[in-house]
Amino acid sequence: MFDTIVRMFKEKSDFLSGEEISRALGITRAAVWKKIKALREKGYVIDGSTAKGYRLIKTPEFSVEEVKTLVKGNFGKEIIFHKSIDSTNALAMELAEKGVPNGTVIIADRQLKGKGRLGRTWFSPPEGNIYMSVIVRPEMEPKDATLLTIMSAISCARAIESSTGFKAKIKWPNDLMASGKKLGGILTEMKSDQDRIIFAVIGIGINVNARLDAFPPDVRSVAASLIEELGGQRLSRTLIVAEILKELEYWFKVLMKGGRMQLINEWKKLSSTLGMKVKVVSGKDTFSGIAEDIDGEGMLILRLPSGGRKKISAGDVTMLK
Ligand code: BTN
Image 1 (cartoon, rainbow, N blue to C red):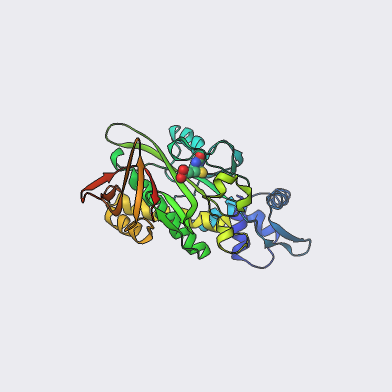
Image 2: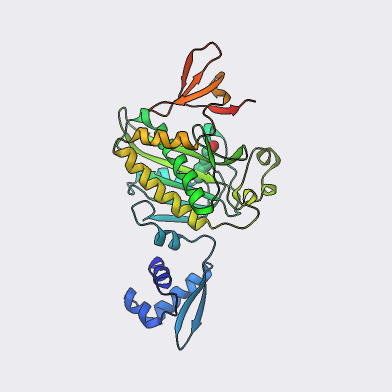
């Protein structure tokens, strides 16, 4: 209902009368007034005039209603927002188990127990960063799950560029990079049986508006944030989140239609890894070599100093000089 009012405001830049809103929503004038009050509490600046009605002056930096007005497909039709949560991925896994539809999104302003890859924590301060999880129900074998992460990294990099102009790079498989430091990461978790994924949760963390001094020193030395990269203007999470959801929906369809090579080719265009001398820590093993390619399952192909090639399915990549 809130998103319908926001949509109406956007369609008509002039005043909207209380009568128009009440007719469109099928609610009383008193109920309209309550909705306007609630929107103001969410950070919308709305001008009110007894004679003319209401006019939208300013939208908040992040608004679920507005994301919903910007996305047209299934991804983002359902958005569950929390000001503070342990982990959006943890809640998404619970909700997916209960059967919520493909494309349902959980977003939070902060996380108290944000999860990173390999059992790490994801530092998630309430400074206007993106912490979101998207539930997907792909028809895919578990062995191809890396493609979901790759699809998500592509979607985020493209969304960041279209909404802010910043060209983020991707470090295999899932790190979003800026100036050689980590701008964001993706944690894909899933439930599967032997030969199919039942559901997957794509967890996305992007440092958008947090200043680096908000991070603890050990994180600060390896982290980047969009506001710092782009010269200090606060950015709209609404636009970035909406673009991510549009891109995810597009690339998910590509993947489901068998377009994995289209995905891999797009990833290669955005990669900061290919052609570089790298060190890869994969479980207990460490390999060094040239990151030569990624294959159709999203595995990294490393050219070893011996001339041989090694396929790596998961690991941490460090660029070597
Ligand atoms: C990584 O280690 O690179 C992955 C980080 C993923 C962080 C995101 S933030 C939203 C979602 N919820 C979580 O608990 N983690 C992911």
